[in-house]
Image 1 (cartoon, rainbow, N blue to C red):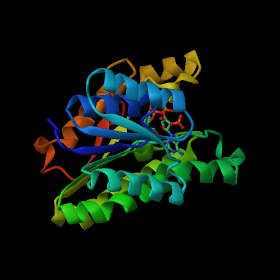
Image 2 (cartoon, rainbow, N blue to C red; image 1 turned 90 degrees about the horizontal axis):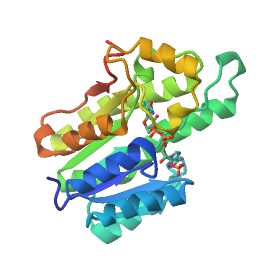
Image 3 (cartoon, rainbow, N blue to C red; image 1 turned 180 degrees about the vertical axis):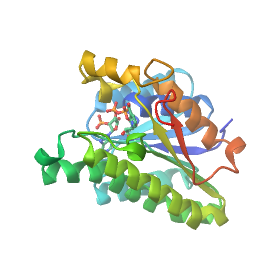
Length: 246
Ligand SMILES: NC(=O)c1ccc[n+]([C@@H]2O[C@H](COP(=O)([O-])OP(=O)(O)OC[C@H]3O[C@@H](n4cnc5c(N)ncnc54)[C@H](OP(=O)(O)O)[C@@H]3O)[C@@H](O)[C@H]2O)c1
């Protein structure tokens, strides 16, 4: 139960983030999610939560923009006066072979995934230190552990998130703040919809459990890491990948 807890989920409009928002709300947290473009999807997520008699709101905020993240978090703090759980889930891909990868493709992926995570943690860290409590959960990827052809930008960003997670776990731990990363394998969302059936088949061959994961497979772990039951877990990278990487 997360009753009384204030939870922020970045990129909560669609995919994994939407499921995380719904499941944290089902644990009775008040959920604030943000999105960068999908307003209808964000409203749909919020409505789904409100229809269950639970609490949620959505804000437009591009996490790669420092000013927007400052405004987003100061609005939340003005209204709720605390933030207990931060899930840095917002992410994008701009895949392409390295020799053809533009500076723009490299930077935009670093900006949203890694710098966005940095900006958001920056906005909550002081408050969590004051509270002497916080749960920070960062979305990495198995690609951040093992790399991938065509994803030099994404793998660098996701590996950066792992290193950021470990450093902050060390820096913030003495004040009751845990910082963990989740490394999903292939999860069925818009992000993986673009893959051709042949590529999908090849991916499934490499997964011992022989199927893609679902957003629920990830949100189950987020809900656990956010709970009191996970109070002695910090600095970890937990894979949810059907055994794909071991
Ligand atoms: N799907 C997978 O197989 C997989 C595997 C490993 C890791 N992950 C990671 O899991 C996270 C969620 O992935 P997903 O599959 O759910 O992706 P998705 O379906 O493409 O959804 C991405 C979410 O991030 C939001 N977002 C994107 N750019 C943003 C920005 N600049 N500011 C704020 N929000 C932004 C999107 O909102 P808007 O539409 O409003 O922009 C959307 O809500 C990502 O970090 C991804 O890298 C996914």
